[in-house]
Amino acid sequence: MSISKNDPLRDSILEALESFIERRPGTEPLIEGIRNSPLEVRNFFPTDARRWYNREMRRGLNDARAMLRYVESRPSITGDDLQNALSQNRLNYTPERGVEATKRYYWPTEYRNSVCRSLSTVICQDLHDDGCDDDSIVIGSICPVHGPRPGRPPCVDFLREAVNDALGSSITGRWFHFLRI
Image (cartoon, rainbow, N blue to C red):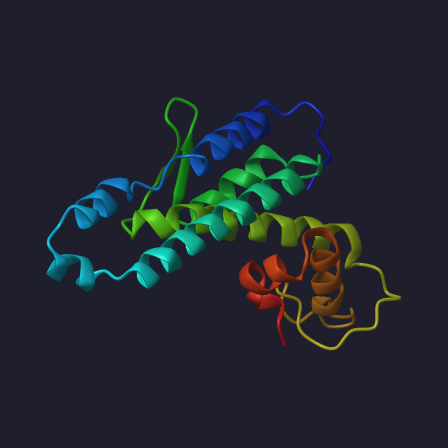
């Protein structure tokens, strides 16, 4: 990845991602309909399930915000890197329409998760490019970016530590599962 300080594509994608994750999940009509329904319907969708969905949606929002802030602070992540990661993870970016979902899934809980998956790919590749070529790293697994690399040390442990330091263990555990051994 090349370091770019003036990348209009990067800036427009980051702005579009910000507005995409800040959208409301669209569960309000469902919850209002349940709240005003007869008792049998309310029992079908209990309060615990609503709380769980709300917790998952809030967690996705907070994780996406944290990862987006991290990507904004890394000028080495380019607009092309972001666009490639979005296209691999059910999202599409066009300057006219912004970020859109390309495949159907359960919108309220998954639209922010697809952003987190995309950003985790970009962050992992950026951190890999920053530090995994250092021969002093002693590690014991296969690199998630390059696979087995004959003659060079694998770098999963380095990436796990770097992501954990940058974003915390909860985000690392949820979105960087490919770094587990």
